[in-house]
Amino acid sequence: MFEPDRVNAFTPQETPFYYYDIALLERTLDAARQAADPMGFHVHYALKANFNDRLLECVRAMGFGADCVSGNEVRKAIETGFDPGKIVFAGVGKSDKEITFALSKDIFAFNVESIQELEVIDALAAADGKKARVALRINPNVDAHTHQYITTGLDENKFGIAHWELTEAIETLRRCLHIELVGIHFHVGSQITDLNVFKSLCVKVNELNNWFDERGFRIKVLNVGGGLGVDYHEPDAQSIPDFKAYFSVFDEFLERKPGQEVHFELGRALVSQCGSLVSRVLYVKNGIKKNFLIIDAGMTELMRPALYQAYHRIENLTAQADGDRDDVVHYDVVGPICESSDCFGKEVPLPTTFRGDLIAIRTAGAYGEVMASRYNLRQEIRYVYSDLL
Image (cartoon, rainbow, N blue to C red; front, top):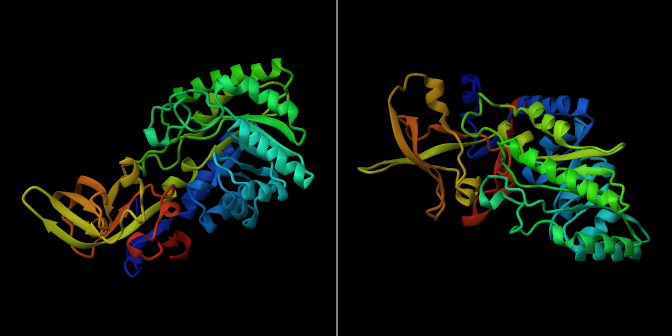
């Protein structure tokens, strides 16, 4: 919850802007590390969730690695001080240029998503006189029970190598002289709150770990991806995910062979709750069937509701600070963009709201700022850190 003095500090700020609670971010990162370290687990932060410089500094300072899905994310991780030996490069469509750049920086591993990609990396590594470390991303056909757009581990998804391709994959690996297989990699989806999904993943990982071992491949790294969800409905009650419960599932059900490491790629769970999009009410349109709050943030600043029909808790910060508005009105909270999909929430219960009130859209620290656009020639989104107000 935002404290009144914090709301007062927002008042003179130009809106909209992303507000990042650095203290909460640091507590979240520390909780993840404290849960992972005793189990010997390695965490890579997924830059696609948020690559704001200040947030990356906090993540790097905690000693985590980086999970990148583009050449520019690899570049950004290196520029912000991440150890190349802790950087993994995933993505179903890596270009030759991106692969060559990552090879030149001697990153830890490429998470390879197709047999053809293996052949391309081998050829590019040979041309540079290098040997590339790779992990095979295998599609485990595990249902994440989440939104169809953020499910990645089913046979129908574009990601990873299918089970029926594995024999061909190991034959290719044996032919590729400039590739070293160091791991197998999995990622079943995002915003997963049912930990049983991860138990099912462990069963598949165990099967495939044994399958490779029986064929003479000693796997060093079991990379189980990320996907741990957060509480969008009660961000203050659940401001830090239960990392201990999450990691304990893998500690109990994953069958590690001697010397094997377990790697994770967490993004949303680390940064979501520390970020909020703060906006100001431009107009109130009260009608017979609908009441609209038109705010100065739009889908250009936060795409998730338009793209995924995602829920974010919406709060009237001015009313919270005033403390004297008892009436509740149901509003459709919408932005200024010329699209009907530019809507953050329908029938949102809020105190009676007026032009100029400050609105917070919570749990926006992941897939918020990084997905912002200049559509409608909007201004580039600003950001404010808690310790600088």
